[in-house]
Image (cartoon, helix red, strand yellow):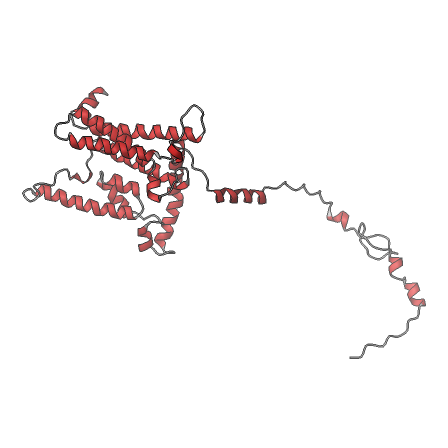
Length: 325
């Protein structure tokens, strides 16, 4: 490990970049631990900085750290040693972590730190860590470290042309809604080709412009989103909540959920009594002197309702004139 660090980091001149990388990770982890302790109302931990009732976001301290370290780097650009540059770069990484941790506040211009929109801050930190890690490994996006002398060297001209093609392909991939593929593909061009050839995400600008609502490509994109993308998003959200905490539900969402629970969660009804067999309930009376009434059902005796044949023969009835039309 020490040999790798000395050869690939120190001797390669990447010590300031490594210090920035470490400062970015340490700053993000520390500030997330701090805000989660404040959220939990831990007594032994200090609370928010509120001088005069004004809540000062930690993004403000990040701006101060970034400005101070950047000015120091610029002022000592020619005469600064690698150690001095590494210290200033580490401070810059701490400030960048504090700023990116509230990236959602900058994006939405309102405090959404513990809301669903606040996940954008964690995404921004993940992107910054991933890109810095790739740079630290020695990868150079677009291979455009030096564009000087492209007129004298056909090889440099080909590299610049390749870089322009890579930028155009990356733009297509980003328009298709594949943010990670587009960013990482700048370091690895075949990944850009795969992202540009494959279908766009259903909610991306490319899908809105190129796919019809009920077209075959849109239906395929929807199926792929449900089958592949959603499990990945759930896994990413689980990792984010493990590291950064779970956001609060909006008040109206919480009220709607409680109302739905009140409506649906009720005591279960008593189990129905086991019905008797139809043959027992619908047996016809065996007493021929009664009419064909059904036993066990409410009814009157046949003798009280209908006269017998002998009674009917001995009775006389007055003819009834049919009603006139």
